[in-house]
Length: 500
Image 1: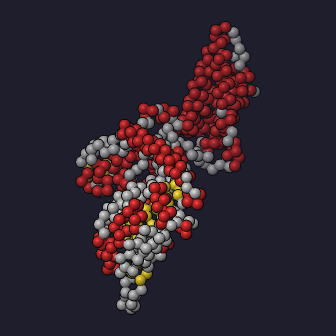
Image 2: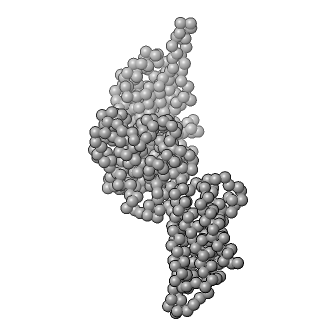
Image 3: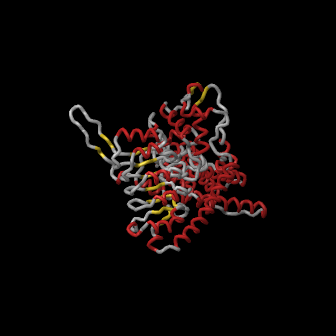
């Protein structure tokens, strides 16, 4: 009776294995039962190991042992493991080749376990039992191996000698023809993406180490959308702001530069085919630089270590400098100390923005604050009465980058004094009764990149002459509308201070 039942169960297990289809329709019950597979799969493994250990002991002592209960437990638990795994596999989402091997190994193990139980019940030779035990050990090892590969990946895939991005640090020399994927796209991905999206790590269930895996995509869908680079996340995530949570590669990892992004964009726009080949002469200028021998995808480790050491030293100096500046600020009365703020929580970039204290800031008081003001990156002196002598002192500051003088009584002498400021990049002269002639005759302002001169009554012609005088500076003045044939537009549309 027992042997007949065991034989029937083994046959059913084998028939189920032959009819298995991954991703077939499943019911809530199959999903529920499949969830128990990780719980029960270890039981038959442990039981077979115990039987194997008992057999080795019996060989030494030449004693006989009754393993009927253990084999029954192994057969029942392996059947439960097979059934729950069968339901789990039906849900889909697994590598079909590995799943198929896992299924057949598990089916063989379950069948061998039942046959071993039969041999324990019926009179059988020790050699037959030993053979079945060997088959059980082989099949359970294979089932465990393929199951582990499915869930955790190949353990050797994480081997350091296989996952060193520096293998792709320098692009190999390219000949007269460029196989775009093999010669350029794959090395970019290997150097900058595969450490998180490869065989060792599969973040987002996405692998980018082979063309086939790129085509499959990840848990969030495909990374290639038609021939449209603007909709293909393989490229778009690399162009997001660095602080964006979706930006890839993550902050702190080597980033794709514009040349490499252009190469990927061209590849996608032309079908993202693994067979796309271009003559070197026809490679677009946007990524022609990658054809130059010795092109680096990753920085030189030695130079990178030196750069990081310098950055660390710079950070330590900034911390010390911040502490020094904070000490000087603390020596001021609270109402004046509040005019000084740091740009961030750790750096030494200081701003002077006396928003609520402007009514109290006299020329004499400003001069007493000048040693601290001259350490500021951004200085807001708008709406204040300022002596010309103050500008000569401000111009000596190497820290000053952004200066707001809107609605002040600016003089030509003051403007001339500021022209020698070494690092001044942004100057706001909004509503200062400024003369265009002062600007066109001014010399210096070598670092100036943005100049606001709205609400100064400067005509369109004079505005154009100022822009000519400052060719490397964005000059923002009053806006004028062109008159049309139907209407005479003579009003000046002026910038408001809010447009700064």
